[in-house]
Image (cartoon, rainbow, N blue to C red; front, side, top):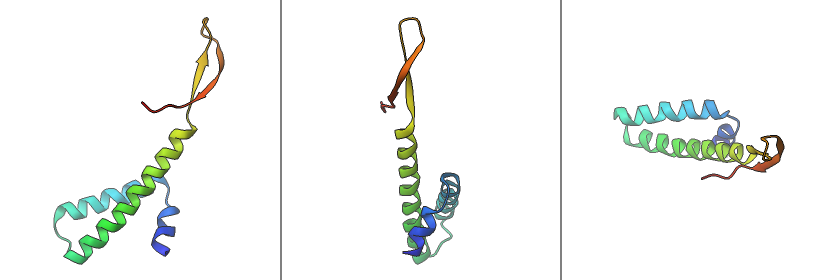
Length: 81
């Protein structure tokens, strides 16, 4: 699926900008029905790609553990609240 491969190659920032353009186009109400459907489907794929990239980045974030004197003693994986 070329469209999915195209989206996978976008950086997070590129995907987010395109998603913002799609939302703007849909909100304008100027798109014909089929175009709006196509835009919505691409927007959904972009949204999922952005969410996956954020989840991946969040998994790599680590919190620094410190001892009683505030000295670093190691790291622990990020735990989302």
